[in-house]
Image (cartoon, rainbow, N blue to C red; front, side, top):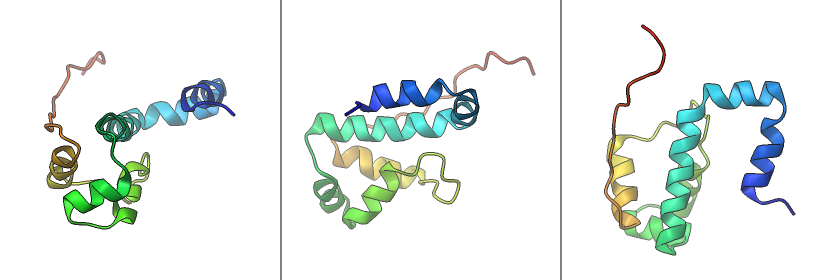
Length: 100
């Protein structure tokens, strides 16, 4: 069985997949960060849900929403998630390499 990183590398070798992935890179990065933080905290989705006062399916949707334009979490939701996994929420704007 392939690891997440191995599968990602394999899928991104397809130029069409890579193009679509790159168009949604920020969203994928956010959802990877959520999963990483929860894993490092040693928590299940159910435990995070309990700490946030919500249900497990809401956490599953939050963590798997990469690229899904229908679900954009609010800053308040991200702050609650961060607190639940023992983190602080940090939002930064980074200078683009693109000329404007």
